[in-house]
Image 1 (cartoon, rainbow, N blue to C red):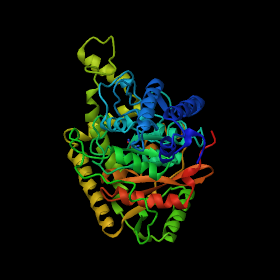
Image 2 (cartoon, rainbow, N blue to C red; image 1 turned 120 degrees about the horizontal axis):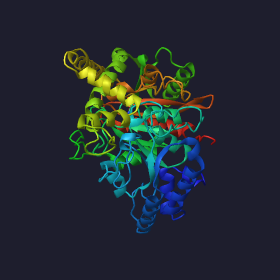
Image 3 (cartoon, rainbow, N blue to C red; image 1 turned 30 degrees about the vertical axis):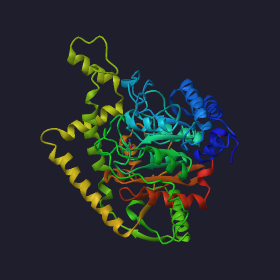
Image 4 (cartoon, rainbow, N blue to C red; image 1 turned 90 degrees about the vertical axis):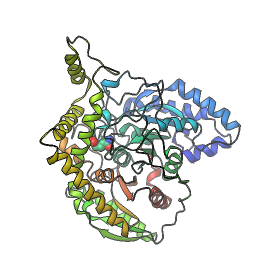
Amino acid sequence: MTTDYNQLTIHEANKLLKDRQVSSVELTKACLERIQQVESKVGAIVTVTEELALEQARKADELIGTGDINPLTGVPALIKDVMCTRGVRTTCSSKMLENFVPPYDAAVVEKLNEAGMVMVGKANMDEFAMGSSTEHSAFHPTHNPWNLSRVPGGSSGGSAAAVAAGEAIYTLGSDTGGSIRQPAGFCSVTGLKPTYGRVSRYGLVAFASSLDQIGPLTQDVTDCALVMNVIAGHDSRDSTSAPQPVPDYTQCLTGDIKGMKIGIPKEYFVEGMQPEVETAIRVVIEQLQDMGAKVGEVSLPHTRHALAVYYIIAPSEASANLARYDGTKYGFRYQGADTMWDTMDKTRQHGFGAEVKRRIMLGTYALSAGYYDAYYLKAQKVRTLIRREFDEAFEKYDVLVAPTSPTVPFEIGEKVDDPVQMYLADVCTLPVNIAGLPGISIPAGFADNLPIGMQIISKPFAEETILKIAHAYQQATDWHMRKPAL
Ligand code: GLN
């Protein structure tokens, strides 16, 4: 176990806290000091909440004294700045919400607070979660802790980079088309996108409502299970949240995967994929086979339409969701316009960044009269085909294993002016959102000291199957224990 308190996992920290070998205040100070040391290089955070964190840590220490605590009690966390935090500004890394202080907590924040969270701050992201590199933050880009000239992925790039850099012990992200898994892969951390409906989205600023889902980014699978135990579950304030009971996600972490059936979707080994990524994933597959899993190839031919389907559905929903930012009720308002219409126009012109405007225009176009049938309706039909194809695959296999991304982290600036290239970064993660499935990315190797992520996908509400395999793999390997030299 490391002696750098900021590098502990949740389960390690919990043990030390319970044994009174460390206090939550000490853990919190270790993270805050780490933030001081590395934040100028990494840029993972929008707002540091030092005072709040220390106050929560003192309360947690009192609670720990009384005995019965949640494993998350007193453990420092960062929350992606797309989830509302009462009294702490929630910006979505946009000028539009730069000074927006929510009057309420998101459901997940509420639950984590009940479990004794110490929140050290809010994590940087692509503006309104639109992007794959965190370069679209209106404030500053986030750098990959493994190589500072590279991107950390996105849109939860701040959340992933912060865990890799030891600025927080765990974080929350959101995933609409890959935004937890792709940055987890790029930063060599563990990131789970739960089933659509598994975690309440009450208080999550909406991007694309039929795709958005909240999930944890952690140092290992056990931590992921511990966070899921707290955040999963039905919430009457989110009508899309499922009434399914929540299991204890740590129960499935047995290390035994003998006889489990793993499908390898051949379409995920896409053209243009970096050879080192393919090699690393093939090695993992052999390892899983050696551990007793049964492996077979599967074909999901509609995968090739997933990118197009996503870039119609997500912008369409975004264009509706983002209509609320007009300078009237809250957020940025352009001063000095003459009429109400002019105020709205200029508010949106100056408040949104280029990528957000691009999405709004794409979505508005796809939904407009005369084009709706050709684009939005057609995309919904293909969405059904993609979902059915997965259903069929899961009749034969427990999980599918694939790369998280076709490449290792790219250079900052490399794709920022080429939207299509940027969109292609998500080819392996988008289909999972389109079908509403759970998926995890776990560290699976390196190419030239740049992380490679492996994705494990399963059927709806089979998070336990995913966690079981991912955990067994981490028991047998140490990729997830490597830390960047910052
Ligand atoms: N990168 C994808 C996009 O830009 C996915 C983003 C996300 O999952 N929030 O839309």
